[in-house]
Length: 200
Image (cartoon, rainbow, N blue to C red):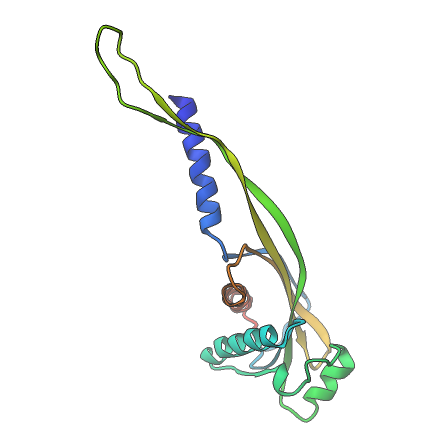
């Protein structure tokens, strides 16, 4: 009976793990301990992506979330072409003459293929009585591996005045079903972290 309970719990945990698909988890975070400036309230948002539609979707959604917090935010696609190589010089040229005090850059670090094991499941059948002693049949479902992807992103906040990074976070998003779910989940994690750090 104890073995049955343990295997059931393992299976349940695996199901719950995959049910959290598209949930973004912070894996690492850094903040410049010397930074003691004000909160940033005029931010250029840059999403580094090979596809223009993904870039626009990410930047637009992040700008919307920052705007909800009464901040001014500008998507980079509105002032930088898709084929512009992201560099300090390119960013400085794009924001010249604008009242931008921070640049928030998100890029893909990598994609990992992983798998989780679903252990065999046993369930008791129906007892029977007769000329023989009572017994239970058992229903058996073999274990199997379920594969999934982990999307790894890194987001860095730069202070325009010092031109130095102030904060950075790495995150994992588990098996997003679509770009939109990945983007929304990743953005929520970024907004929560920046708010907690009192940077926005």
